[in-house]
Image (cartoon, rainbow, N blue to C red; front, side, top):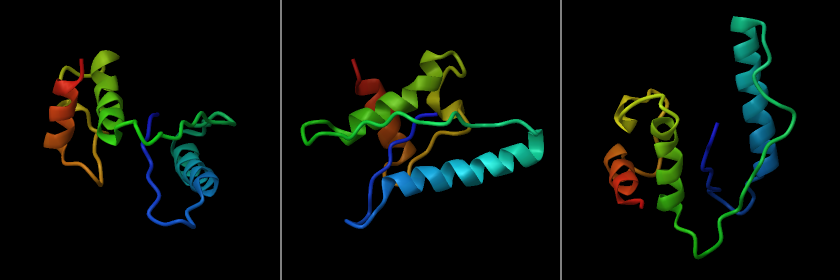
Length: 97
């Protein structure tokens, strides 16, 4: 899973967010499948000022196409953003070299 997460205030706690997300989604998954969903840890990368948030979002959105899971990002059921419209994400994916 790739996710681009942005804090909405200075008191935001990323580690708590990840822990709660993994706990809640892992619990729901285990209730349905009896299997574990998550590994123990995670990899994170903090964007620097010179890194474009939209370029990173475009990279993440294009992953299912690169992996052969779908032929068009619009066909992938788990694509979306609270910040960018699907059109902005598609334009950004098309723009990426």
